[in-house]
Amino acid sequence: MRYVPAMADDMAGTSPEPEPSPVGSDAGLAWPGPHEKKVPLWLVKAIALFWAGWAVTYLGTGMVRALRSLLIVGLISLFLSFAIEPAVNRLEDRGLRRGAGVWVVFIGVFIGVAAFSGAVGTALASQINNFLGEAPRYVTDIEQWLQSNVDEGIDLQRISDEFVDGGGVSELISRFADDVVNLGTTIINVIFQTFTVLLFTFYLVADGPKLRRTVCSFLQPHRQYTVLSIWDLAIAKTGSYIYSRGVLAVIAALVHWVAFQLLDVPFPLPLALWVGVVSQFIPVIGTYFAGALPILITLTDNPRHGLMVLVVVVVYQQIENYLFAPRITAHTMEIHVAVAFAAVLAGGAILGMVGALLALPFAATAQAFISGYRQHFDVEEATVSRKRKSR
View 1 (tube, rainbow, N blue to C red):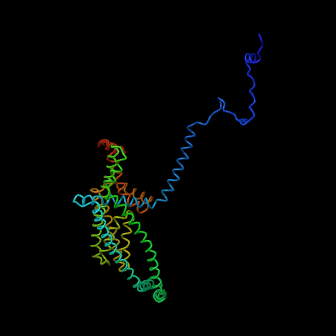
View 2: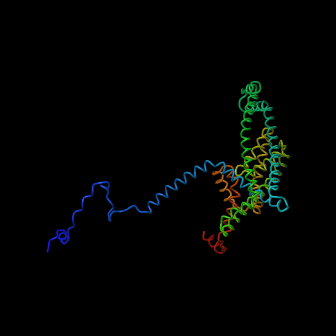
View 3: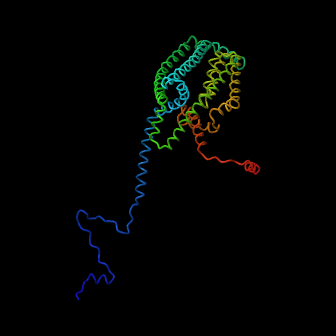
């Protein structure tokens, strides 16, 4: 038998030495052996998903920032469409076409806003003119009070002469004129934005049923019912919000008009309308902003009456918060007070005044939807009583 070295080596338990790696284009490449670890596939997918998510988030954030004004216009238009659609539906039930019904509602709102703005603007302009004319008398009254209570040597005549003869009044009027010019540019921009909002609102309301059918055509039947329920609920809650605010505004205007008449406040009706509208339709700060104008105007005319106006505004606000508002909103827009306050703060932080205005109907819709779809359980009174006793 012929001796074979390889077989002898194998039988001896030794293995041949590895062959040197070939020299060429594949030289130096080491293929992973059976004991070397590979990168897990799930880790590769996780890394890819992370970077894809980061890219989508970065691009989406940039798009939202770039389109922020358009998104705000869309939200305002959606809110207005929900607010006026009940009125348009009633006009449609009486035989009027939806497009014509939208125009009727628009014209009514425009007449109301124009009358309110004209009344308040006339009162404010007249009061500013009176203040400029009475400025020297105010300086004299302040001088006399300071001489009587602080120091007899105080002389404010030089300030009065400089204000009147030195051109202080003219300079103030010229500055006011410059501000009016700048305000004109702002008004033009506001008019353009308003036209855009009204255009969106018109199509959202006039083609409301068609729009709902188009949206639901992309959904399954059980999803269609949910979407339509939320849509109708949002319209109902927004309409209830506008109705309740309108009722409270009328009550506030009537009460303040009577009080302003008794206190001999200048321009009682325009100022009462201002308090009623602003205090109800501007959330959180509307009450303070509404009361500030009649208080300041009355203080310039009669300080004692100005303090009485302050008392009237504060007292009525307490009566409204604890007597009128709970009863009216309980029948129109059911929403917890804490939920309403948190929604207004969150909306204001996100979208400013627009977000604060839209927060209440949105919160009412969300609360009604959640309470309608969540499971309810009965609470036993005996259990509640035991818990109270244990405390």
